[in-house]
Length: 413
Ligand SMILES: Nc1ncnc2c1ncn2[C@@H]1O[C@H](COP(=O)(O)OP(=O)(O)OP(=O)(O)O)[C@@H](O)[C@H]1O
Ligand SMILES: [Mg+2]
Image (tube, rainbow, N blue to C red; front, side, top):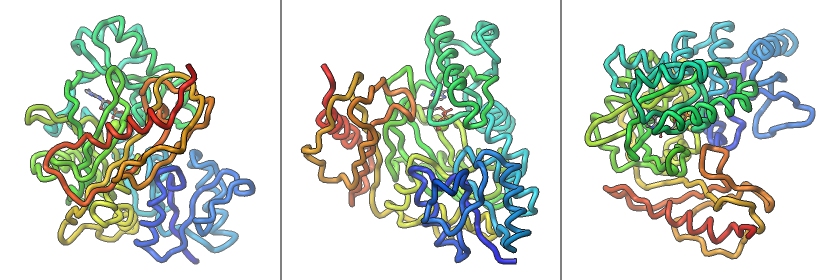
């Protein structure tokens, strides 16, 4: 039987470097899952399984057909985003391949279970309570004092996450989360019936840590500084690697403890942590590499493709570094935001900041720009690189991105 490596979730925007990393990890042909290969053919991949990427039973059947008819079997099935984790865990179990356990996968896809586990293991995290709908909200607010953050139990991209300072705002925030689920729960197969009411950790300081997991060994590889939109929303508007907190041993220890607490024993995990006055709270973690091109930033700064390590792990190899990589540069991404309203024109004749290495506008004239609420409020993407590594938080690229967005997007008056 010939073999291939199946990458799940890698053919999406800002996950392109997963394929490059997989090629560094293995010489096997690399396949993806495609719903309609007759009409969509991603030629960067060597082959594909013809199935709906969300339909784990359908993928399994198609894999088995390919084994029987073409004598081709997957050596490893590697998820690289949230929406492929459950599928990969199921497929790896059914096919006897290396994968996360069902228990670990369930814990990392349910923000409440996750935090329960963290608390049990003494990892600092915000207090929270699960509710099913508005009828239970007032009760929850008696337990978790205002201000609170309300969010769907299993979603991403800050979708449906917002802050409430009053009971009325809490009802609005819950409606915001529920509306988001009405729109996306089916497509992403996420739980639309439960929401989390959480203690608000009042701090703009936030990082994510990429942790390489191997059995009970953990290496905190890179710390990313996060930049957030204005309240009451928490849209991520930029990321920078390496954060000026990269040498904070306690921070990295907490990130590793969080992975240990959840039993993540392979691959790269992405741990989000709030920082305030020398204290830390784990906001959440995911058993897959960071999204939003954070892995690209790590690769730019450290010269290491972390997807390679992630794939090695699923191939059953030891992916750990003998000596941890050292950052040689600073890399950042920012998400361009037009002012609210309809975009009348997109100007090309603008001055590009010296450190900018890439600029992509992802909307067209006629697009209506909303306030920065979550991943979908973005109008463009800018990447930056500097040779220097600063010891303090830099915000210049966020400011220059806003100035650039103001110059590019001409709004209808
Ligand atoms: N309890 C809290 N206190 C303060 N801020 C919070 C809290 N919970 C969430 N946030 C903010 O909201 C953001 C999004 O929340 P969370 O990470 O739980 O949702 P998400 O949609 O899975 O996020 P993403 O996919 O963008 O990482 C966090 O990164 C953080 O900035
Ligand atoms: Mg998050």
